[in-house]
Image: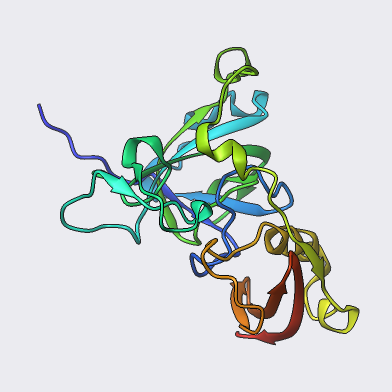
Length: 228
């Protein structure tokens, strides 16, 4: 019998747009997300035993990547946007089925009156409001492979920028969000083919627009505007 897949809940994060989201989960541990279950899945028994695990796998919907048809190759932005790689050799959101997989750290289970039990996680690389299809515990004895080879991604895994965030601008950001924001900026939000030192980029984070320039591996924040 054919069965359709449906969300069990949504994750809420500080990312209102795709630009600026870390390209992989776990790169910025200071990021926080809240997984709120849909009413029919708010049975506390469904989470029984989950607090015994440090990390979880999230299976989610690339909700902004839905399209008709598919391409067998994609252009990873970290390879300059010009090199084509097989879609099944990539983590591109543009897939035959727009399904994502992320590993996150479980911070806490919040017991709330109006939303039921909520999972607080760190390191999520998901857009605010992303539908979650399923959650599975990470098993370190089987899911971790110390001798694994990362293919073409190994060549860019250590790429980071130095960040200059003037104190007068940083003070506009709530203290509990500063570390995460600076770490996301250091991840270099740009596609690799963009390298114009005069260009002013803008990244939405929480309720702020953060403007910055990048020159020779150095990112400088130039303005911070509150959006809400």
